[in-house]
Image (cartoon, rainbow, N blue to C red; front, side, top):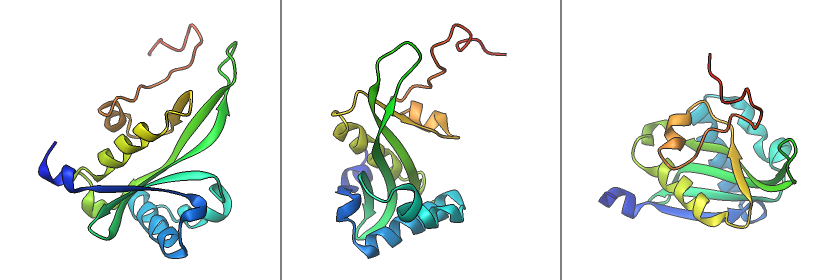
Length: 147
């Protein structure tokens, strides 16, 4: 770990604990990172309550974010699993590649041991595989086949 990663501060707050200013900063980071204005509705439509937010700071500036919410997943023929659904993973574009996203995701993994499984949808599986996440292709016999 580099000195920069050692200095990254990651805080954990529930949705209910976030102030209006913190919520606005989360939205700003998500919109910038994904170039998607849909994140304006993050706290009104998608995550109104019940999430654990992992906040990565550069000094006092929020530069990275991820949230884990409780969902339930039931793979075919398997029991229902309490699932940490990971969403709104974002790092401000000007700070990508500096270790903030990795630090946030490492802290998230360390804090979600109360779930049976964690999942997230991403267009960047290589980033998460580098942090120990695995691509799930389902549990059908054809799922492992590639074309």
